[in-house]
Image 1 (tube, rainbow, N blue to C red):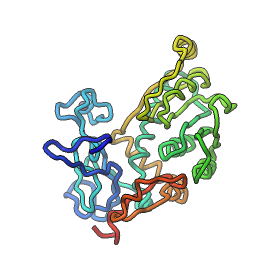
Image 2 (tube, rainbow, N blue to C red; image 1 turned 120 degrees about the vertical axis):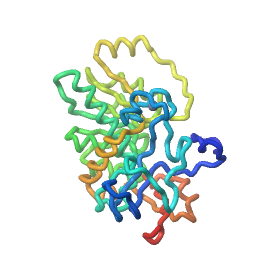
Image 3 (spheres, helix red, strand yellow; image 1 turned 90 degrees about the vertical axis):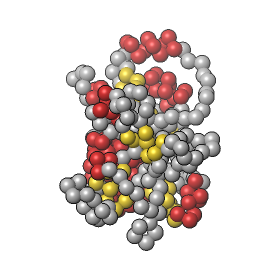
Image 4 (tube, rainbow, N blue to C red; image 1 turned 30 degrees about the vertical axis):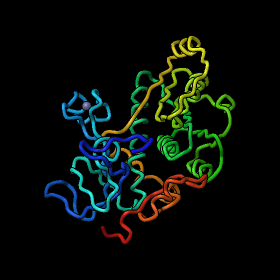
Length: 307
Ligand SMILES: [Zn+2]
């Protein structure tokens, strides 16, 4: 692993990558609830061995000691193989009509959790959000927008530029696409799902949201930007306006299920447009070079529909 984020399994010097998966069941144990031919995706994280209190309850996405493992990321080989096995508890069945769009389950699960947690925070008061802002129109931002529109919210999406298919994908959800400065949007969001990981933007968002707003951070960046921020002012504004700023990572089993339900009721043609390129395994390196026209690039490991 060079210049990247990931840990090989103990005693190994290589990690099989692939945390986003899709497969067809070839064999399932009796009583597992799965059957040959089922379309499934695998859950990424596994509970830590201690286990901590959340992991003991199946809430590995809230692991307290950081000793969880993750397929394709942290100490467990990933799903990047023509044949893989997964414990039934860590497999999620998908609507077969989704076809290869089922591979979108894992990224969608991260947003299902972000929205679920956001909604839980809103139960602190009697009013309900109406206007949502999503920052970033990559795959994560697009799923945030999809789940926002499925909740009946007025959704706005802000991105640095309007190149490629993202403008059409946003507007076809019934959401509004914006570029430019967050202060110029002329909206007052009740909820923000931040998907860029751009640190300075976080403090600007705290400046433009409605009273009692919730800002959910889902993005991370490798940057080390330093900006001067009037933290006393930010503190004062957040206290006086009941602002909640929180982070959300990964997903538990119920979030995968929520995401599977959301994908099943999403427009199939819209989902298909998220996968802008399909690359065969022997040309996988081409998948690593993204262009403005790419949203999600998929590497196909089963070329003839058979393992
Ligand atoms: Zn744990």
